[in-house]
Each structure stands twice: as C-alpha cells, then as structure tokens.
Amino acid sequence: MKITAKYIAILLGLSIFSIVIFYILNLSNRRAVEASAMELAVSEGKTIEKVLAKAALPLLEKGEIHLIHFMDELFANDQVIYIALKRSGRLLHAATKFEGYLPLEKDFQAIRTFASPLGEIIETGAAVSDGSGVPYTAHIGYFFSAIGEIRNSARKGFLLLTMLQAAIILIIIVFLSRFNRQMLLQEMEIQKQKEEKDKFQEISLITAGIHHEIRNPLNSLYLSYQMLEPLLDPADREVAFHSHSLKKEIKRIQGIIERFSNLSQAIPVRMEAVDLAQFFVDMRSVWAGMAVRPEIISHHEPGMTVATDKSLLTQIIANVVNNAAEAGAGRIDIAVSRQKDKTVFSIKDNGPGIRQEQLKYIFDPFVTFKARGSGIGLALTKRMVMQLGGRIEAESAEAHGAEFRIFL
Image 1 (cartoon, one colour):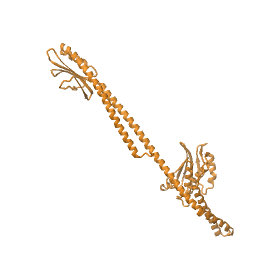
Image 2 (cartoon, rainbow, N blue to C red):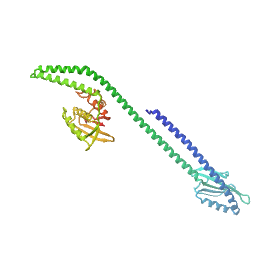
Image 3 (spheres, rainbow, N blue to C red):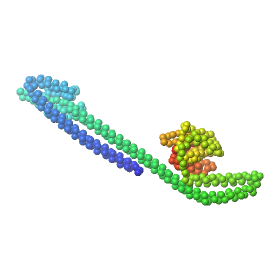
Image 4 (cartoon, rainbow, N blue to C red):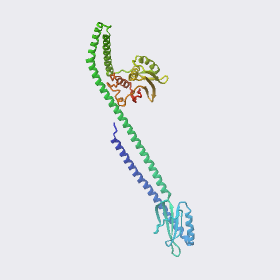
C-alpha cells in the first residue's frame, strides 16, 4: 500500500485533534481538582475565622495590646503573609513579610481568596467588639500552598504527557514517511525491472529476426568463402589483404550475433563458495587474452570467500575490466570488501572517465560511446549481476577515471 501525502495529512490532523481533546479533558480535570482544593481551603478558613473570633474576644477584654501580641505571634508562622487589626474601620496595627504589600478591602469579609504576585492567598477575618461596643476587625492573610503545588503538578504532568504524545506521533509520522519512501523506491525498482524485462523481450524479438534474417545467410556466405579461398592466390598481397579482411568481418558479425543471443537467453546460475585468492589467479589467463592489457591489481582480505556463480562472476569482472581497457585505462584496481550482508567488488581505473550525461545510459542495450562497440557488454554484465541477486552501479568524473561497484 502506498501512503500518500494525503494519508499523512489525515493522520497529522487526527493527531492534532487528539492532542486538543486531551488538553481539554486534562484542563477540565485540573480545574475540578483545584476547585476541590479551594473548597477545602475555604472550609479551613472558616474554621480559623471561628477560632480567631473566640480567641480575640477575651484578649480584647484584657486590652487591645494583648490582641496585638496575639496577632504578632500568628505573624511568626511561615505561611502567614500579613496581619492587620482595625478599630472602627481604621488601621490600628499591621505587619507584612513584603514591604508595602497589604491588600485589605474596605468592606469586611470573613473569608476571601485571591491570586497575588506572591501566589494564591486566603484572608480570614474576625469581627468583635470590646466592652464599650467599639468594633474591631482582625485580618490574617496566608498562603494555601496546596493549590500552588496542585497547579504546578498538573502543569508538569500535562506538559510531559503532551510531549510524550507529540513524540509518539512524530515517530509514527517519521516511520510512515520512511516506509512510504521505501515503498516508492521498491515500486520504482519494480517498474524499472519491468521496463528492463520489456526491453529484453524486444531484444529477443530482434535476436530472433537476426538469427533468421542474418545468421543463416551469413553462414552460407562464410561457407561459400571457404570454398573460394583455395582458388585465391596467397602470393597476391592485395588478394590476401581482402581475403583476411573479409574473414575477420564475417567473424566479427558472428560475434555480435552471439552476444545478442546471450543477452536474450536465460542465464543459469550455480551457486558455490568461491575462494577469491584462487579466483584472481584463474582470472590471469582470461586477462592474458585481452587485445589491450593494462596493469591489473586486486585487493582482498586473506582467506576471503564469496557465495556466487564462479562462471558468471568471471564474465562480469572480465567484461568490466575489458571495457575499461578498451576505453584507454592503463591501470585497474579491483578491491573486494564486506558491507553489512553484501560483498562489494570495486573496479576502479585511471582511464578518461565517463561524462555525467552518459552515465545513466551505459547499462542500456545497444548504447555505446566507443568508436567500435555494440552496446551489449555492459548490458549483459548488468543482467548477469541481477541474475546473481545483486546490483551494479558506476561513478565517474571526466578525465579522472571510472569506478564500477558490484554488490553481491
């Protein structure tokens, strides 16, 4: 299944929607907890208000100084932010832990809560009168730390869960994007293989036509030449030259027809463990028959083996080396290494290189950039590599040689 940008966008939209729903539910839950904590704070404040009212009355009967001392003792508590004592609505005594901060209201309230720059504050007040009927109000403002702790804990929990959810969604999106990319690459590879199969089917039709229309008449021509050859005067240099040229060209055409046939025929594979040291020793006899032989040096780990078809590997290496030699390379280095589960043959030459615009066509059948070439060698090489379950690729910079890498 190919995952398009549309599906990824839908997934992203659903993910954002789920985050929003999660945020709303978490916010609702947090507010419910805060409301319960506030109810507890107000209940506690009412209890303090009753205790304060009962304690203030007997102290006031002894004199207001005793009530002031009691308020100062309460102020010593770390949770208390400020205290205040009013007589007939006018401030009689006050103390605050923060200079200038005394948030008293004009109208008396037994219990009130409010947010401040310092945090959530609860103010408890008590109204009493002395023996002569003079009204007093006592005010105590203190932190209710549980509310702040609940809020901070809820915020941290919400942030962590949101980040976790976002990370999971990001991982899923990255996974799907990579999966989609892999699927697209596989689809492109399948399409490429299909195009190559179609191309080889066309080649098969062409080869069948060549066999029928060219090979048989060419064989008859060669037989006729063999019958005429004894009648020719070998002492005549011009006759000898044309006779040799005719025979050479007939054999060259026969060679091209054979290569066409190889390109269209099924390639049998016989897998075995190939010792690379012995393999390159055997390759010397193959390279000895080359018309142009550059310096060829091989590199590999001692005792290294590869599971492959020795005959096909010989043809593959020989084709690439021969192609480099015909292009004008004076030295060819063959390095064999391991990369994960692959064996990599790197064949690097110091020839004239391949132009960038030509690189993508060098493995296509019938495409050649040499003066005398059929465009079959590298196409057949690629087909043999694919038959072994591998791949071949090329890199080159003009005037800096070329490198062919074969992954098996």
